[in-house]
Amino acid sequence: MGSLQAKLVFLILLQASCNIIATKDEEWKTASATYTKETDGSIITEGACGYGDLHKISYGKYSAGLSSILFNRGSTCGACYELRCVDHILWCLQGSPSIILTATDFCPPNFGLSADYGGWCNFPKEHFEMSEAAFAEIAEKKADIVPVQYRRVKCERRGGLRFTVSGSSHFYQVLITNVGLDGEVVAVKVKGSKTGWIPMSRNWGQFWQSNVNMKGQPLSFEVTTSGGRTLTSYNVAPANWEFGQTFEGKQF
Image (cartoon, rainbow, N blue to C red):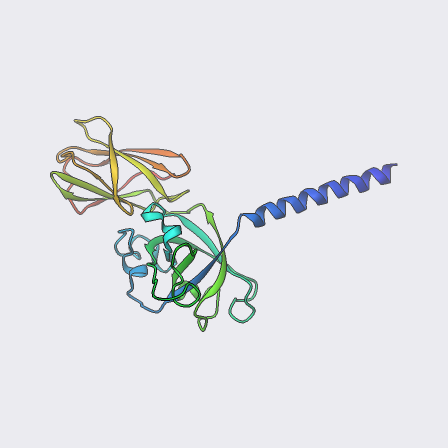
């Protein structure tokens, strides 16, 4: 009886293990990926999210342009994805190594070409456009396009959230970068020494705006990510802050 019980326990544990593996595999979704040969293209130097020089904010070659359905009008900017090349014996590197990419750019559709040849970012295709260096870490550069699997992962960042202030006295704007955990900012509030908390609206990408004149006041920010986490950084910018400056707050 003891032996039978042991076998039953083993089978239960084995089934549980299989369920765990299956659940983990279900987290991966299918897509496709290409790369750009432009060393100064928007994926590397700026991107549709408005981050500016991506090397300066540490995203660099691990930046990606997303097709329309993934980019979601810029709300996905800053999110992190794990990618691996799959199901192609000629182009995928052995062992299916994976890389972590940050969504920084938009891959526009090309409706003049079919979704299978050139129109890879046409709706509703799920597609990643990568830098040549990042692509070479998962696939042979000879490939024009490869099948990939992807999943959202937490972003690991060094240092705190960065707030870059721009605009004018009647149009105040802040770009938020280096966001950890979800990486994807969905709500922002700003507070001066003379105001309460003021909700900011998304201008585009991760630019957030307010029409309140905040000059001469120290600035505090409340940032909420797509996962529902909220972080408050008090007095990030001193009272004498100037447009064009970047300030560092707390990190998730």
